[in-house]
Amino acid sequence: MARSEQRPVITLRSTAGTGTAYVTRKNRRNDPDRMVLSKYDPAVGRHVPFREER
Image (cartoon, rainbow, N blue to C red):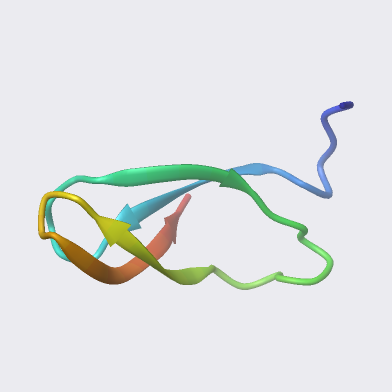
């Protein structure tokens, strides 16, 4: 799969302050703003919002 500027690699960091992170790709055309996804944080043991870091 070719790398492109339309789908950059982003880091999603936990808002619970545990330091847990997910790495994923996003489509800049569909999601130009910072992403916030609810993901599982194993340090907390539940789902929490994860925000995109730059």
